[in-house]
Image (cartoon, rainbow over all chains, first blue to last red; front, top):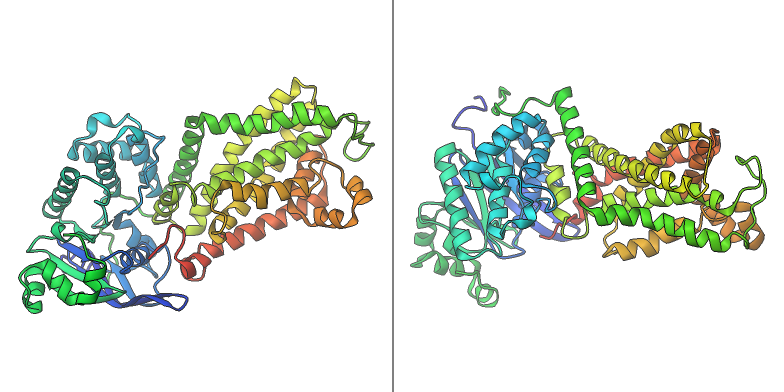
Length: 257
Length: 283
């Protein structure tokens, strides 16, 4: 089996647990994202989504289980794993004082790319998100939705096979949310990217997506959205989610529809 | 499992890749510095205010006898210049490292750390970038100070360069270490009060240590254990084309210690970040 093989999952997480002191943030989490697959990770704030992202991006290591990006173990082959990984963090991480293109060039250099490669790739990626003519403007002058799109372009500069997005639509208006979601879905189809999209917004998940419901560090349901709905005996994903995490929980801290 | 490289765009982590990565980090730091004129002006005004106002006021109060490396009696302004250079680097070291953790920049560190290059290399590059910026600040300060009759020998401007690189690395790695271990200091004011001011005042930056011993043996001891004292002395001697070996070795030792601890703290499996979920951790 080679890493070019279509059968290798873009992301494969096996039995990962993680604790901060006594608090268990993740408990035996397993998850798979296929190449050309859109996978939604649904959970409330504090469910463990960001911890999982931190482990995949190796901000810190998983204490048990394994995480593989395109077959490369994140701990043992971290260089190769990280090269095949693009990430959009929950917090904005663009440099507001620099121009759009300068941000892209900086990121490309962190991947070992030359400036000319960066400009070529950057122009192409900006063109795709409709911001090519704004490449010389400072990031500060962009709207929230535009910044997010630039962050996606930046994450794709080094042509990763897996794209992680941690609640990418938080704080955006409905139009921008839709634009970003459909852009990412297009990347899955056109580029064959594997995408892990974390969210607490149920309406961002389509019926043919794969979804994982993460609650208090544990995966409570997984599979196609239709399956999850069917197994829970509910009529909609929202009702299924409420049934799965338990009525008491959902009454207190409801996930937005 | 055969390891083939699935990614055609990025070159393997070759020497040229390392080089591009480091240059990219330095380039970004330089651009940020140029774009933030306020930061540049503040970095210059701070020591100049000390030089023009504080030193002028204290000139008559504080006489400095002949001590190494000076060959004659020197004006108080001349005495505190190396200390003020240290202050520039101290502020710069804290700012460039801590800005990553505070402000809304928290993500900067995270986006740096997802680079496939080894973490020690990324942190070292970040450090080198910060030191480069501090060198520019120091030389502009020295140029202005020259007009204020702070005139070290011309060769001193050259010999001070390696000293500045070393002291810059020490203070930068201290900042890097603090950025990983300290969470309670919620903003830069906290760092000012608990790190910068004590380090600056409890050192040989503003007064020779023998004067300190006259007034308080305890404070003298504290100054004696303060790494900043040694950084300032390295700079002071180098500016007059001399080497203070004790100061040099202490500064070097502190640099290695702080940097090792910072790399340890940022180590994904052992470090402090892993235990706490920082920077910008959350759940």
